[in-house]
Image (tube, rainbow over all chains, first blue to last red):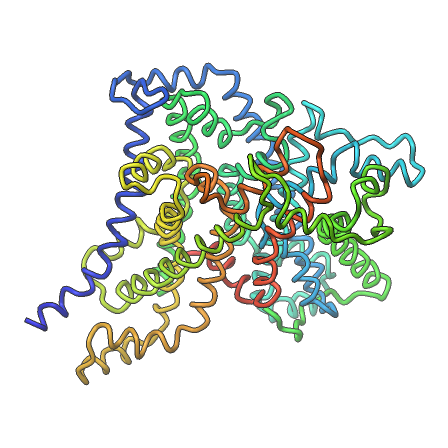
Length: 292
Length: 293
């Protein structure tokens, strides 16, 4: 009897976590999927209306603004973080004194909340008290920086803050990658007379492909989910200038009483994330098994 | 990560090296700038901030904004300061981190040392769960918390953070235990050790580093969470991130920038301290969160 129990124990121990994930993740995805096809308003209901919510969603100007902002924000965020991260990692990989200290400084924003980051940058970029005012005090009277109040430029201030927060993380990923490069290859290239810049351009940076891929997946996933930073910095404003899918979903579901439309926007967000993450995880796991 | 004996440095002249150091120092200033702005302006009077230079150090240091932010400023309807919300966050974080770490360790142990058919599928499902945009679970979660009588309570938030932390904690422990010699486990079993004896006496004593990594990862994520806090907390269970946002973005009254900055530092302090004290483990968590398989 005791041995039977021991045989079943591993399954029993794993069961609560498995059930929790099954219900709270996959069950909830199905339920949200179902709601996205119902006429739910303030409260969920079960009046099936097919894909009407999706048709409605993509006809909404509000949603197309959110998608456009995500495209602008996501592209700049991913490109700038990757370039800056790689650049800083290469600089730091040159036998720098105090490397540990510099690394710590570059990475600390990752430890703090997007809300805190949002508060700092919101006031720092505020024309009344922040950078603009400071430059005026320093005697540069014509200096102007009103992006955060400007409908056409506000989304770029979110990029500035988000890059500040995440670029150190990407730097750490690239630094780990650079430290894994085989020194023999570099020595051989040096013997052949290749210059430092050429070695990086032709040999080392191409070897960083897996890191670029990981960084791309992590940053895309962060960009699509980004909600906190927008709320703290601009609240989606001025007007709807910095609305993104995450803020759209929240306001349609919880403040505009259009739960069906909110649920359909959440499903679109899930599809966006999974279309990037699933192929990546699949190839990582396949690759991992091959190496075993 | 720190191997000073790197040889793939560019063999460069001293001019290039000066340029490299200049650039590195420039970025040190760039990353520290917002922190400097927050600290220095949290010690200024409101008049000084309005009239002056945000980058300058305070002319006369005042601790009044800190006192205000901690215990006096108006948040929502009550003038309580951030203190009660700070305490809410602690009450929420400690059990959520403990539970998700403990369950993650057990899951990782089962998945690597007691494999049974289907275990890899379960792992795949848990891994994928790490990446869902949480917007997808907000509506059903609100309903379930209501049904369980946990809507607007700290208990509800603890449940939410435990469940959605499981994917990563399981991933961390599974990858760590995969490298742990299975022969040791089998030998102990032959000697008559039970499932839990193996776990407590063999696996856990050698899990120090991964426990630290997981706790830091979970602590940082749960403390910094905003979406779940904003969606599921009630009047007396609001975490500090939500309270800080309410303070800064409330449309009523005078904007007390110095109090906002002091409050922002208060909200950031716990995770910053953890990062400074154990940055190595923090980075390991970040790396494990990025590179899977």
